[in-house]
Image (cartoon, rainbow, N blue to C red; front, top):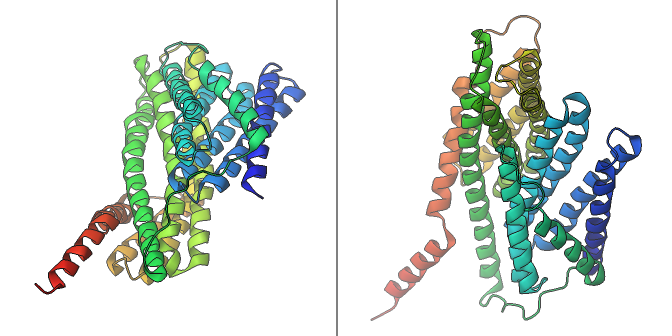
Length: 427
């Protein structure tokens, strides 16, 4: 499929999605409305895939971010449809605002990349950046309990209409005035490109793992576990701020699920030379885990919606049940995560770049998650949580990747090689 055809398909999907969700959301509780909202989710995911295919060669970071953001949007809009019936309007609204936050954050670098490729006029790309930034700000405000309505969403919505019409007319137009190609020996250029790819993959995986550790720690241990502990202790009332804290925890955990996908494919790129088929399998295992984790998070969305709709500061039975469901579904998903870490450990063991002790610790971490997940399925009580110790392998991998990316930065390596070449020249 050419860029022109892919762009025209994306433009048609932009316009169809706008109509499908607008009409579908106006028909709540009706089969036709549910079908249109589901169609909108499929179209949104297809837009992300088409844009990813077109933009990935030139701007892989923006392409991956947009693909994951659109996928999260599609999932959350569909989840909101289900949550409206099972948990109420509050949960559906939280899912919708989280979807808009994902769309806004993922679309800002996407518009900047389109401007750099000259696939959009500068003024239109600037409109898109501003519109999506306002959309994200409005969604964040709504999630924090500040009512702003649709005022901040209007510029982004109008941009999507104009952008859709433009794509439908001309597709993804190739950039004009291309940059000069690389000079020098072809083999050395290819080697340089390979080094840059590996460095970028290591940096993306390391930074992603660091962000995930911070966000997951704050959300799970700082909010979710505190709510569960307060209920177990028989606390009769909690500060009203816990309602907002749970919403923020949901947003943080959804960000972790998105980062899981990005880290999965960054590790695949980094370790592909050690075994392409196994690296691909490992990436899909972690992607599957991210989907299971996102499904688990919808139970927290439901809990936050129940608190919002009930207007209460207590952790009632419905909220307790939702938190329990979240933990159970997450535990099942960790089976895939454990397999992923085992495969990554095996790839790291075969890789010439990764120390053997790092590979061993990663594999041990994967075995720990597998043991805990399988133990949770055993009828008898599972007495220990092995992963509370073996998770150290993940931390070690994160630190090693960050150190590797810092030491192997292509620009620094080129400067070092140039310095050595100058020293080798005769005076």
